[in-house]
Length: 160
Image (cartoon, rainbow, N blue to C red; front, side, top):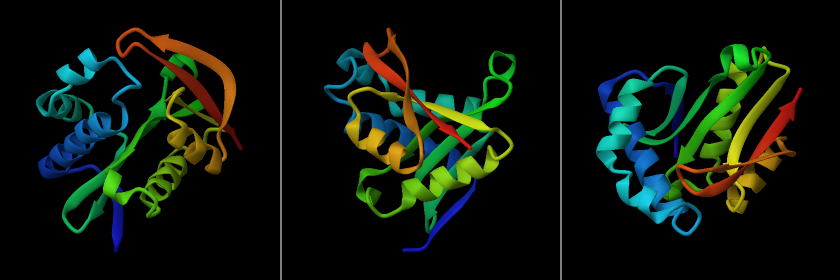
């Protein structure tokens, strides 16, 4: 398996990113988030989001197929010295194959000028929390309840 990590560029890649987003939520989050939200999260909505915000996104490709992505950046004036991983998703058939780690490393490389990087993760998503801990992130004590998905999230931080 030869995985390519690259900047999101083409319409085909944007549609592939949207598919990964849609499928990942429907595979990983039932029972963790509000089912009504999942029922309303269609592939079309994910495509609209993907076309609306293509910048600061890297995709993982296996051949021509998009199999994962990472979105990164900062929160502007809210926290100008802190980078953030906004999203990292990989198709479930690629779990445990190092794709997530490649995406994380590539995203962190783009955020190398930030002394601190944060992300938010569902409090019940123990698999993701363990992965982020392997990448050097730790829960920093901040939590919130997202009313949109009716689920608790915790913030994790990586200090360099």
